[in-house]
Image: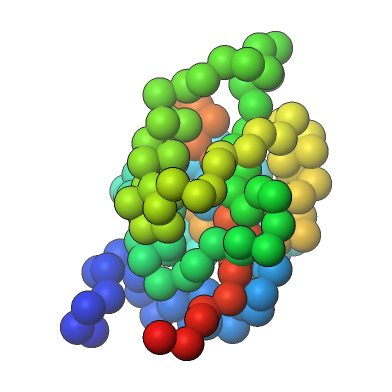
Length: 144
């Protein structure tokens, strides 16, 4: 246990987040996501809802503010405009940690898979709701 850190940020995830550089991406995915097939390092956080994982990750990792979008969710198959309740929870986690300056973009299912294949790592949450998947692009940590 470390002072000031979210307790769900274990050693493996903290080391991964620390090793990431500006512009690297990390995928936080649900239990249905084919994480091992992405060919990236997989970190498991079984039992933890995906929005909670996003909030913990963003408590130590800034989003990239040099690009138009720095966070993406997977579109609903057959209804790209659908807004699942979990999407609002992802938005809330982003606002809670990063403020209102970041939108949650959308990627078609197979485009999301392709982007996840290029991620630095994939974090499998315990999320059982459908479409509980998000990709986050790391920004820079500015001097205080």
